[in-house]
Image (cartoon, rainbow, N blue to C red; front, top):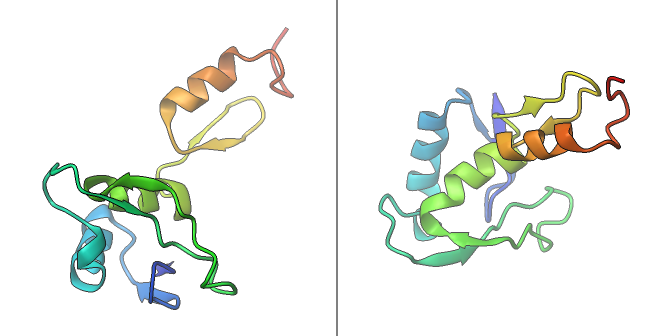
Length: 109
């Protein structure tokens, strides 16, 4: 189970943390901020911590990518982990950059 802290949601439960269920929730409750086609319309992410609903993420992004952003960044459901230091990344290209960085705490010699 995951909880939605987007816009006017105050920790609304989403029983199934699948992409399909999260998509369904956003289409039903946050329709103005999502698009099912790559129309180019933009919005700012309204995800908040719950304790400060007036302070949201604010990331500017395409309405087409809002659900993916929430899924990866806020819910951390698509985390790639470094095998050396176990740090999590929401994108595989970020993990590749991290692995190339000599500052990884557990970099092999």
